[in-house]
Image (tube, rainbow, N blue to C red; front, side):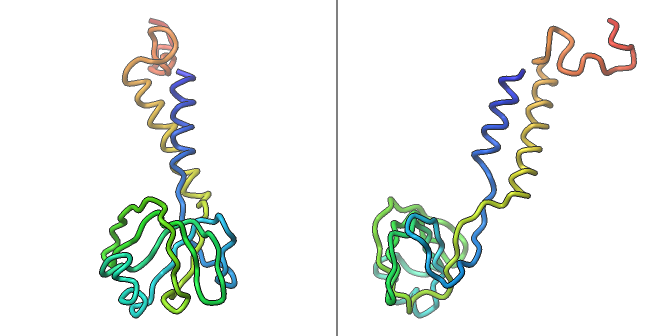
Length: 149
């Protein structure tokens, strides 16, 4: 049972909740995961490279200058919100095409809630399938008979 709980915690930890928050000054440090929101004009200009009706580009910042961002693109996000994966292809995005620069950060509150739900699910599954200690299940002492059977 301890192994099952450990696996549940590990999975919950790996599946932490992330969000994109504005980057101060709009200059991401190299290696940081970012989302570049595109202006309408920028989306039209970049359409031949990234596809039509793209609202944002997700990737790892490779560098930036006064005129452009260089990303290893992980995905592009359509205007409908659908994310389409890329294979870390390098792309130079003109700053004039970008409306927002956001960095990917861990949302601790949601991650803890997810971890707690994962632990409860693991305990529930363990109890449902009798994976507790001995044949009494995980909570064999609950049931009003004082644990006597």
